[in-house]
Length: 329
Image 1: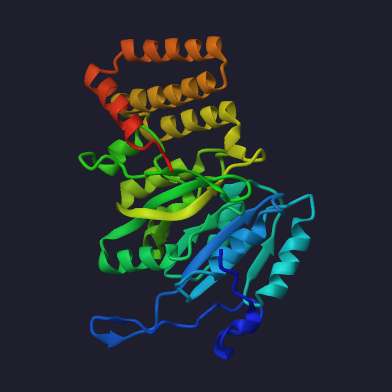
Image 2 (image 1 turned 180 degrees about the vertical axis):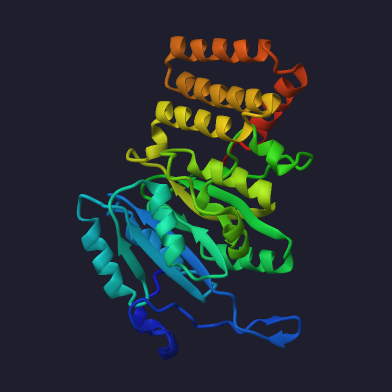
């Protein structure tokens, strides 16, 4: 990952604390020169001192240069604060804030309130953006003004950032995004870019969810704006033992909460969403070789199918579940 040192930047890019990085490419839109759109990258962090620098370096290593990067320390109890201070010296234009621990939703919301970009990208502090992520997705949104959110693919990597597998995040083309999202969450926050006008319409992340808050947000996006897919890998999703997504039982409870929140009034979509949650959980248990627990989850899944989930939806769920699988490198 390219590490952009402040001393190597042109003089006009060296600014005071809290300023944005603005060494422009001077593109043209509509035939006339214009300043590139400002992009805000929000990085919530909680007790991830060993990974945070990689995340911030990847932001300032982007080929798109008119960026502001905002790190929100969500009440870390280790030496994360020292790493944030180090990064503030390394990048004098880095914006930082610290808050009482409240979870990723509240940290992202604080970042949103402090941001001023026309476009917003979210990056968890243990993950990394590939260098052309912002440039490619900004160009797409500028070319498609009707789209409020664009998302792309990513690489799954080891703790040391060694590639393990690719993840194709395209939703089924024949399905409306809201219908597809009623079955499952298709992409992580790190591969999305949102238009500020869409965020203003959708609102902030739901702080009542301690997991699956991104799935909830994408569903809300699909209800309010057009969601599109741009092929190609734009980020690295790091695997390590401290990931909150590793708590599948807690994640399952949150996903059920999201499903009921959005589809309570639509029995068909609600049954499909709950079946998708149960199927994902059963697969996780099977991989962990917890055979009895996996079979119990499958029996519950069958119970849900028996009481109202039509055969066509069962088949579609199976097809959807295999469309966006890990791709061996």
